[in-house]
Image (cartoon, rainbow, N blue to C red; front, side, top):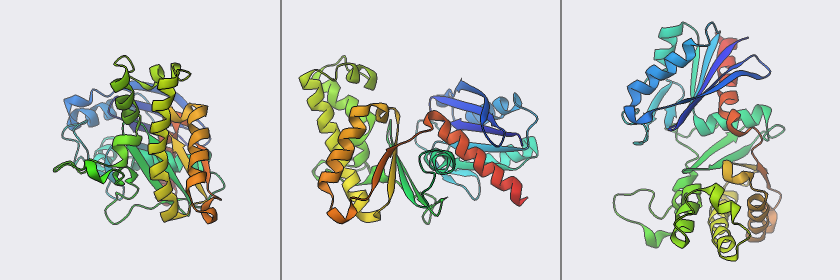
Length: 294
């Protein structure tokens, strides 16, 4: 088995070969996303050509994805003109092999389900904290997509209704406050030099910086309390670079357990274990499933 996999993000495209057990020949390429959707898909084809021959293609990508059609239902301006791109059709016409296309968070959740922190759970939730807040709902080891392929948009939970503004569907919502972007926004108001998570966590022992991080952790917990009480999941896998900080997961777990009902405290909060390989592995698994059904 030789499956070529891509993970298309706004900044970079990760690539590799899945041999059925592990990822090989992993590389990373600039997306150059501002050149638009057509360019990005052409670039994906060029990258895949460097891996020929292969038996199938698995693609994890930013944006809302109709996995049945292998098309982008919606993408924001991070990749202009990406909405409507029929990626599966393009890959299958170029390479004449089966192609699977899935949203990046869903693909990462499937990777964790089969090979990582989700092994052993039939049902769990996956939430990633990065530029925004992404989510996936896994039921019976499969992605629950909702009626329009968009379920799990946990970033849209309304947590600060007094801060809603007309025309911005995410104003006052979880994504604005609980994302890594939200943390940087809070920290930079205190000190303009705190422009990314690395700089913030390097100064975590400073009293004022720790206070900002603790306020941000509270924002994460606000959303988790709501999500846990709705889904009653056995496990929530938390992803994103910020979750690599031991203090963050420790405090999120502690505060969340303090604020949910006793009967929901069986939930296990776990750090994602596959890192930036999760999307590639999940997309590869999906492509492998296609090979078995063809």
